[in-house]
Length: 279
Figure 1 (tube, rainbow, N blue to C red):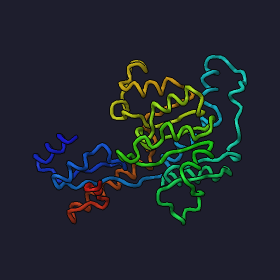
Figure 2 (figure 1 turned 120 degrees about the vertical axis):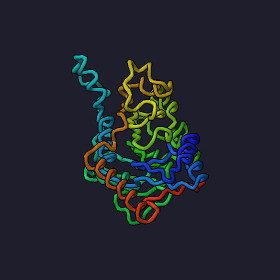
Figure 3 (figure 1 turned 180 degrees about the vertical axis):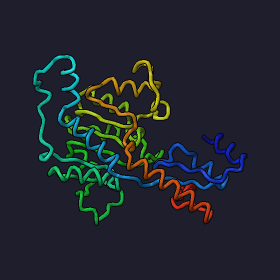
């Protein structure tokens, strides 16, 4: 990416915009070096990702993926492994209670579910969740749902072996954030050793190498850790980074992107300027 930014600079490019939230695929240090402005779309329909996270969590919680695999093979027995709690008697933990996390929390709250949340800087006005520390959330929750940005060196492998060991052995982990915020190999091992109940994710380690590609088989997926993770299906389910893929969310992305362009043409600075000089 550094070479691409340098080439853009040589072409006289002064602005690098993305129509998504994440800027982890942009070399911010390189853009700062060349005094380029970076802009993103920090907010779009929060229900889009929240609804998918909710669906993934409930699919695993009620053992739907396991049951469908078996019925498709003609096995209609009610297996002991399908026996489940009801969501109103469960506890959900939201890691990252911003717009997306809070939107998911509200979906669970309508079901009568207790919702805990961990946030580095809790918002006291947020009545959709009960704020607590991360360890307590991990120990208590039946479903843990991640809504944190990927910041290399900070949120990288935020959920690894020590955090997985705190979780209940039947707890479900849901990731609609970014692949690297989870130690994917540790999750694959935890599933194999029955130390957590399941993992549902819309993101993988090498999203850019995988999403929107069709492989001949799972063995052809380039990252072996991703392969090891997905080999645990149906206790691991993966969707192809489709959380944002709704009419409302895409319309918001386009609209806000044009707002960035319009403001830049008028004032020389986008509305949603990213701090590319941050540590």
